Image (cartoon, rainbow, N blue to C red):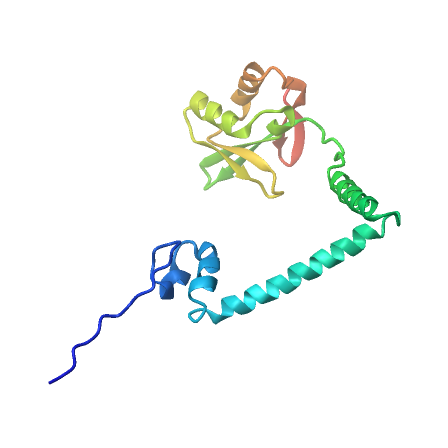
Length: 197
């Protein structure tokens, strides 16, 4: 007579609820890693090696940080910690130095696609403190067309409006946002910048 098969004992992850063998395919494997290191190290031996390497790297960073901050003014322990803070703060403020002001102007360009379709591109509204998402909604409602915020070729955001609304848009912009003077609105025609006024 054959032996009865014994039921298989499955270890379920305490984080995601999947069997521990399948945690790596789950939605939040990074959250499961600490639990797996502690409860199922035999299933993922690489996790233990990674954890040891990270601990070594973390300790090296801490030693290096102490060495850098201690080189400040040579005082006691308290002064070395303070000098380290000063170093970090001065680096942080250095990154936020003001960028040279860009010229505040709105540039409107009509781009023709497929001989009949065209898109009106509006650039520079954000320089006047206007949220581009709100502006695109208002433009879409006013001209009953599609309008969206996209990244242009220079990685700056711009508004693409479907259709040729280039000359109607100037009046709408100056009425809706009084901060945008008509003298700051320009058209791109034949590769040249032309004032709208």
